[in-house]
Image 1 (tube, rainbow, N blue to C red):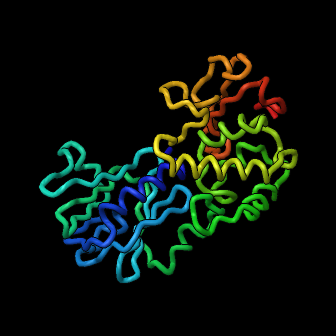
Image 2: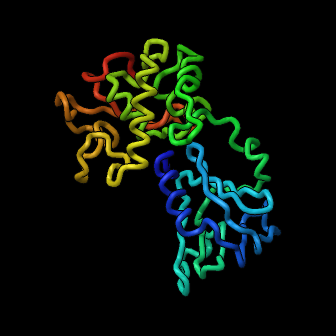
Length: 269
């Protein structure tokens, strides 16, 4: 699933192609908004909060989308269109006065809401390090509200701190030297939040740094533990372990860790 840094980069890419353009033809190919007509609206700006993308339009309208595991956005140049095989998966189509066309493909979440009611959809989210209103102290307070909660599960909870997905939760636990199942009451949360914010900002804004946690951009060398089950730890040589996700429990995703570099409770906690 795309994390906050990838959605942030997506918004930046869409801004350069779409912001300031008027929609000449628009469709939302989802049942709840199938009768909406978007022609004549102007795309004002793009914003993100965590993994949520907000496309703000004129007339107090916001298009809210979420990529989850399947979604993507594509903008075609004038005279071009999406390959025919992908057209059945289009959920958002916006033809622009520039001649370009924006397609939201296989988007599992497509909402239309009054811009002054955006909080109805995203008001539950915690602070986001990639937003101008980032509040580190608030993130620490929310993460520490339940001191018994496992660290990885807390980092994944978008209500506490928005934008971290499974890759970052696993990598941050390693970088801080904590077992993913360490209770947050035993964690230096201010230091963990500072590292998380710095890492997410670098990933989102530094060319070539997207989700590179080791500093090595070569394929297969970019992560400390994520996706490396059975491989030796890059620091100590201990075999990296993994436990499968628990279906239906968003706080228990697939988890990788080094038992030596990350001492503490195990998955049976």
